[in-house]
Image 1 (cartoon, rainbow, N blue to C red):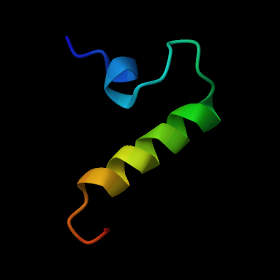
Image 2 (image 1 turned 180 degrees about the horizontal axis):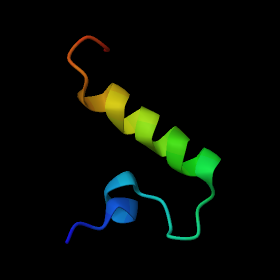
Image 3 (image 1 turned 180 degrees about the vertical axis):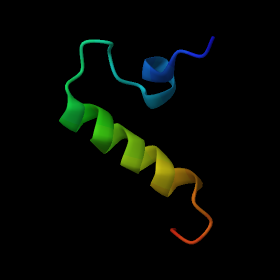
Amino acid sequence: MKNYYSILGVPPTANKQDIRKAYREKAKLYHPDVK
């Protein structure tokens, strides 16, 4: 099973805002339209 916290680089105790911020940073990193 994938550990989504480690993929996002946040601890399992991260709050919703930290998870959302990390997700958006990763999305921008891999999205083809965003440089």
